[in-house]
Length: 219
Ligand SMILES: [Zn+2]
Ligand SMILES: [Zn+2]
Image (cartoon, rainbow, N blue to C red):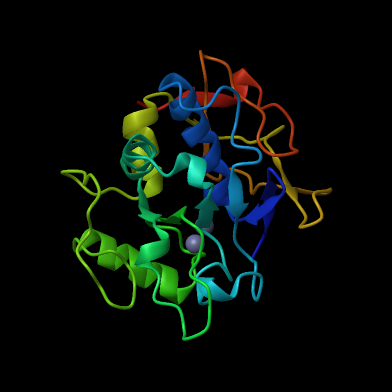
């Protein structure tokens, strides 16, 4: 599975595009000024990195965000963009005896990400069922959308400026886990989501700018 790096954290293709879509929405809501660098505490493909994560961050589609973003406004935007997202308070943790609880953070699993760990996919089901995604399965206490969408469906609706690269010549290249371009291109004809801002395609990861002539709006 190809891995990508965004703001120094590993993720899958879904995570890469979703973070850029989030940044567009968070800027509009004046929750961030520029981007999410320094605010992502954990991405994916981080097996053994954080014991309290119980394997959920071993694969793609998972993010933990800083306590600074643990607000209802952030959760609403993340959920509108198709993520199972919860504020995880210290008091939500049930650590083993003698262990410290986690620090307050936002935990996110992208709905519809095929690269997520099994535990993460179960959390999405828990989210859709109105629960908190933790082993003790408490009720969800956050804002909930009326219609649940996968992250890619949601990006189309809420970003409102979704574009699909139909002939991704000059489309972003894959980035290896160390952040270097591997040179392998996205498969020709692949439906690549590009969230444009103010009519301009933006740079994805360490890849290139996607040329405007190569994308078409589908909204
Ligand atoms: Zn997490
Ligand atoms: Zn994914």
